[in-house]
Image (cartoon, rainbow, N blue to C red; front, side):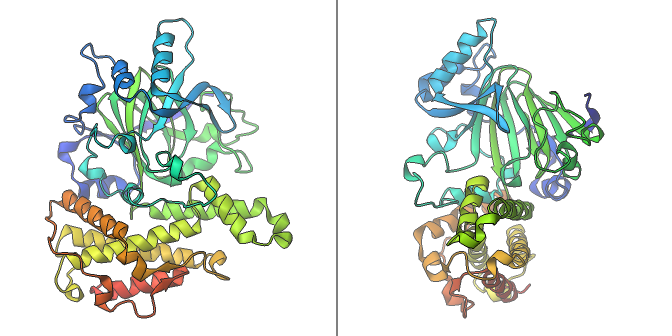
Length: 457
């Protein structure tokens, strides 16, 4: 079935764009775009490409060959994704080089390699300033998203640590149709090679699902039966050919399928912030209700039905309600810490005093919005999913490091210097009152509302 192509993704020279432009034209509108001129000083663009202009695969074997990685077999479907294999980087490179010299290619695609976390002293690239407002990876640099005492988390430190990845694959490798994890934003930089992207806007996502909205199309160029996917032929796609050293921005909820037109190496980040965190909660809520529906028939005989639902939610979505609530609470506290750091008298803070101040206010207002949405969910009504002790949180060294990292990031984004004084403890602001323990969204909502009033909203 031939695709209906409705247009191409816009390409923009980075020198013509700042973060405010990114927000106005792409983040707030949730539109894809391709940027040029962002990778010129990347070490990866020198070390990972040979003098003859081909990918320097032996460099990876020599320096990072012992890493264990996940490799997709692009020729074999397994459930809703491609079959995954585990091997060392050296084994993967050897297979790639062997296949390239033979008539039969196995089409193996190294995906989701947590390269930056595994090799922090090798600075392959610097995240472009326009993509620095990344709540997800800032948080995961200091905390686990999900703590499961039954999992082998300590020995699996790298694989659950961040959403910064390296992808490597030969010509012909590809990624099936999907929307990104958490319905996050993502950006993907081609260090070497060219990719073909096909995008479908969120308003049309129902067209790639079956009539029961249970399963979506796997391969838009495969056998898409009209009887199963009756709306598929109505879908109108955007297409884009991504060249070497270009970075593509993928907005929240956009389904996309990607094909490597040449041997390709790319760097990819998933991320979210105040502009799309509502997508994260909406997805989490949908998956929670699906988890409830799957086991509804054992509700009356289950000792902890809600706990089982949350466990299944974390297994499917990567976080549960407790994780998301803790995440949002820590971000609310951190934003207030940074507002306090910007002035000696937070009660007289002018939200327009600086670009950073405006962003911090905006973050708190969006956390308030999400807390209102969370409050309406009945799963919170009968009990608290977790308990967060505010005093313990702000006294924790990891939280102070998190605040400092966030402040440094925002200072870099807006070229605003950091205050050198020690961060004052928030309890000295006398804003907590009864909010010493957060158990339900009402507690978070009351705290954020109090904070916004305190700082002069």
